[in-house]
Length: 398
Image (cartoon, rainbow, N blue to C red; front, side, top):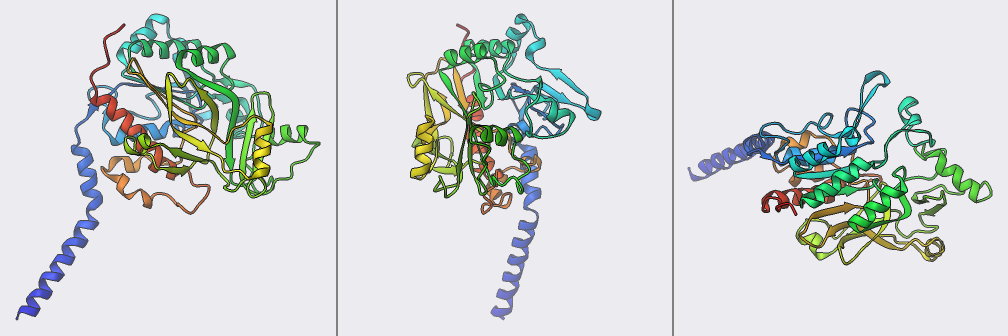
């Protein structure tokens, strides 16, 4: 009799386990629903929003939603509404609702009301992108973009009030005016070298239709009309229009940059020891008496690639994630387009979804960018926001 009873128990246990697994998404959603809301007023500035999906700052919204941070006492953030910058509409229409319309008194009030500022992308919107729906193909007149005097004034007000400030590529490069860039650099101790870069999965112009025409044309102008590249690699672009191409195997041992993190970044911020980064980045240097790079880009170039980089003054390693050292204000700079990742907000409504991130990206695809969100951006920014929320209230004004 014991054997049939044991079989029944095992069968019931199996059914219960299957039932629990099937209902796991429901439990995760209910756990998210029951998580208390926490008010954290974040002034998001994004000048490069091409569609109402707002992919350019969706990664930040994912974290705000997952962590139940609210813009007031009750309302969660809406990615298509709760930011300052370029607002696309149907039929080729748009609204400009950046900080440029604010007076100094209004910016001061905003800096008192906001807990944090996040400048995600100041690159802006260009005529070809907006009116012809051609993405990054040809340079054209700008509609809106670049860091403005009002943006910088607001950031400095936040700095004076000891608030949290997060900035990232592209706030220093074109089209930000030189005078504003210099003022930002002096104020925050982060200096642009004039170089930006990006990994491309193919430099074959017959295959990769996303290659910018200006990139190809400028390189040809500088190299007797030649474009000899066919495989993947990294393109470096200087503000004076110089182009350096490092092609996989020809110049590179590894085709894309890696972000390598120090022990602090791994232990406290949850960053992996090393992770591929496959999108736009800028090459900066920092005032090491004021800031610390907890993660850096590493370019694995062969001897030919090293000669090419050395000839153009590009280092093999440069800062990726910068943290301000002192407690007088809280400042981070991400030297990449970290907030722009091809993800969905759906998983943010399920508490603990990060434990199942391996289901949400293809780790074998070298073009994969969602993995960077799950393994690097999500733990990094989640920790920054939670640290700030749990810390003492912003210090008294100076």
